[in-house]
Image 1 (cartoon, rainbow, N blue to C red):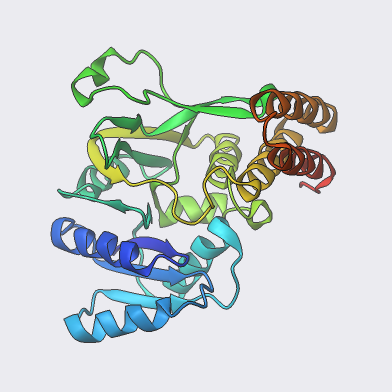
Image 2: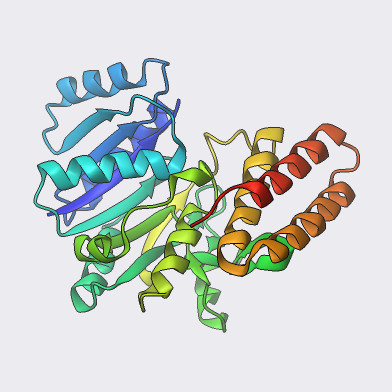
Length: 292
C-alpha cells in the first residue's frame, strides 16, 4: 500500500485542496493519512465534516495531541500507519501544494527499482509555474545556509542544470517502509527546519542515497505555518541549522557557524533588530542543544 502523509496546522481549507488534488490525480496512492498538528482551530472537525460529506474512505484523519513540529507530526502519522496499514511506500507532501497529474507514480517506479533511497519531485511555484527548486538544495554548512537548486528557472531549462541537490526537500519526499526499518524516524528535536536534511545525511552514513525524479512535479504555494520571515522563522531556522552542524561537524564548527550566521543576519536585517536578536538567540541555542 502506498500512503501519502499530509500535515496540517491551521490551514484546513488549503489542506483539503491538496488532499482533493491527490485523490483526483494520484491513482497510485492507496490511502492518505491527514495529521492535524494540534491546530485547536476547528481543523479536525472541518476534516471530519468534509469526509462525511464526500463519503471519502481513502483518507484517515488523525489529531496529534501536541504540536511537535514537522518531524513530530509526520512521525505521528507514520507510526499510526505502520500499526494499522500494510505499508509499502510513504509519500510526505506539504499541505500547501497541489498536483495536476499523478506525481507519485514516477516516485513509486523509482522506489520499485531501488527501495534504499529517498526520492523527491521537482517543486514548481504555484504562482509563476517556474522552478521553486529542482527537488531540493545545496548545503553551505559553515554559513548555516542552504540554497534551493534551480530556483526561478523555467521548466524547459531544467536540462541546463549541471548540479544535483545535497538533499531532497520535504515538500515532496517518498521512501519505502524497508528504508524506515534501516534509518528510523526523523529527529523531533528540530521542531521546524532541517529535519529532512538531517534525516538524509544520517541515511548517507548507511549508504542510502537521495534522488530527484524529474517526471514527478508538484506545485507549491509557499509557507502557511511558519509565519514567513518572522522572528519565529529566524529563531527556529537558525537553531536548526546550527544544531545540524553540531551533529555532523562538531561543536567547534557549530560555534563558528553560529557566529557567522549571526553576523550575516545583522547585516541583512539591520533595520529589524527584533529579527536579528531572534536569529542570534536561535543560532546559539543550536550550539547548546544535545545531539547523538
